[in-house]
Length: 200
Image (cartoon, rainbow, N blue to C red; front, side, top):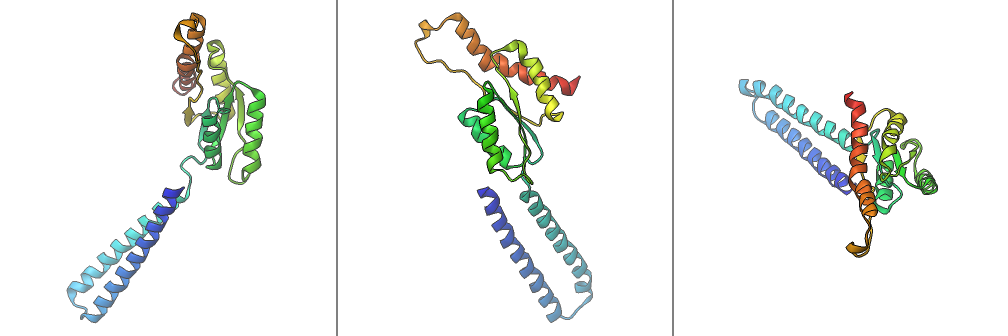
């Protein structure tokens, strides 16, 4: 947001500079006798200046729009700290959110928090999907459910992870497998499950 404000100020200064160049050019042409060279250069100069003004306005229009507006954004583990912040930022930018998490109550709480501060004319109602990435067997069905929400996915944020604190020797092989499922195999399976619908 700060970058957009600085860029807008820069464009305003640039527009003032262009206007001063045009007025200076006109005053020079009117002070000097309108020779053949001036008659030939004037249309080219005006055409160039109008092209620069057109590009300036086009860039201004593009900068006024959000880069994620109308994009479908899937956030796994949207109920965690980073996931919540991503959800808030993308939702305020006008993205179509699919929020995934392990606990339905926490997903609903996030949904209510997003809806309460959002402008309904700018934002979309988020979709909620239950997802546990450590359960590899259900991920293909969840990928289909995610795609059923909007029909496509533009951005996938694999935010979910599992952490265990403790001595390495006390962690069982089953827990190691569950950690690998949640942190590696689950996100890979979900990504492939979403991509497969685009290529086949």
